[in-house]
Length: 172
Image (cartoon, rainbow, N blue to C red; front, top):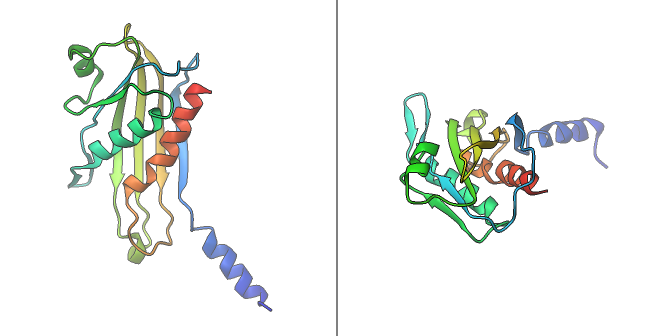
């Protein structure tokens, strides 16, 4: 029905049809997080690629982190004007829970559909104890879009899967 060469070409083309993710654990959590504990998430400063700034990237990153933690707590909020632990700690938002500080290390939005160059992102997530402000865990999550797209893919589309997987690992 199909020639062998067609099937080989189809197999090769499908290998580029899914995004790729990786994780670089910097500091592994020693204990599991407690469900239904308050979480305050800093909003990272916007990401850059070369001279291009992506103004909404910080908000989108914080929203993706909030969505992931919302599966485990009803007390999750984003501190829109804070991008660091020191800012969170100085705010009136001290809590008996966790602080999460995301940092955009790389945010690259490419016209993959015609250039074949994938979108890329690297996000560092660091989790702190809300009372002691000691670091609980830290990781760098990386994503790279599929190279075969038909438009509409962006770095923010790479946020949910690796962040959800990482947050799930903190509770299980």
